[in-house]
Length: 199
Image 1 (spheres, one colour):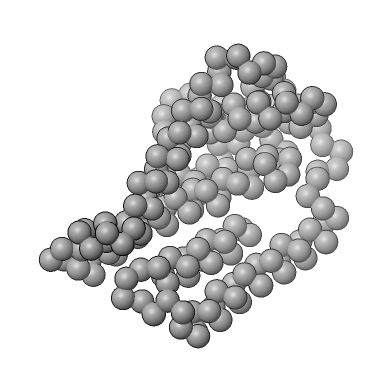
Image 2 (tube, rainbow, N blue to C red):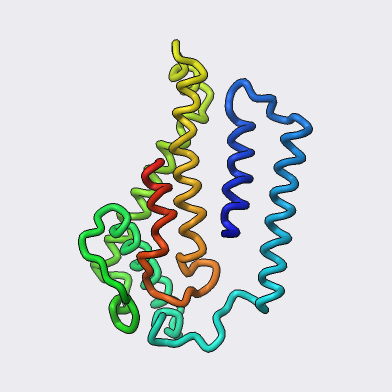
């Protein structure tokens, strides 16, 4: 839910970057500042009310990665989880209702071949991000506009918004900012899958 403040702020910034928009209008600045201040205040109030983002008395069977004391093993295994999420987004052939306990074995070394999955996922995400942001380059905007002008520009906004939805809805469940109470939850992919389809 809180990630949508970032999505709305990103939409306002994108709106200002599009050609033909008065980028530094007073109303645009006020809307963007209000979104950032209200979003930051809401996040701060939530963290203050819940006394932080750690899950107290987290069951090590629900998320054994969070209970692992070695930080390198946690980082490598979370990278594998990111790759598994990407695989589920692109090719959801095997679905499971419970990924607890040892459903995703810990990655102990950097030479584990399973790390090819997150590597390809990160490269694929970087490629999608690059392709979606290319229309913001001025020389490409001029050549892409052609005869269709405004209609073409509206079409090019879709991939950028899709990538923003994908990224901003994935970050809270990625165990990057704080530990999550589940290893993998397919139900958490509903909103990121919509972003991927838009991208």
